[in-house]
Image 1 (cartoon, rainbow, N blue to C red):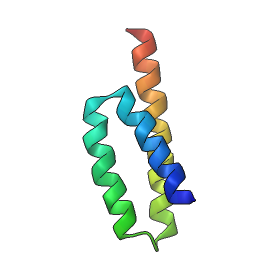
Image 2 (cartoon, rainbow, N blue to C red; image 1 turned 180 degrees about the vertical axis):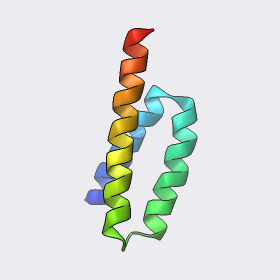
Image 3 (cartoon, helix red, strand yellow; image 1 turned 120 degrees about the horizontal axis):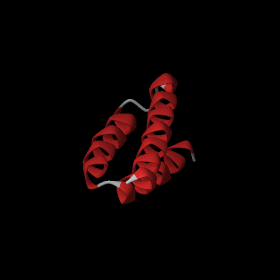
Image 4 (tube, rainbow, N blue to C red; image 1 turned 60 degrees about the vertical axis):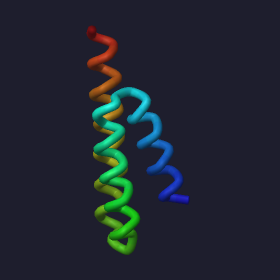
Length: 62
């Protein structure tokens, strides 16, 4: 369920930016490999939320 949530965040992020799409694939595969480490998953979620907010703000400004 947590991985699905992370995947949804990455899908939203990849819609916002093609460059982020590549990053999210790398991050997502990294999260799957190191799924046991809860801290990494939390960091991934926090990072993707920050990325989405940043991209949204950037798109709103320009």
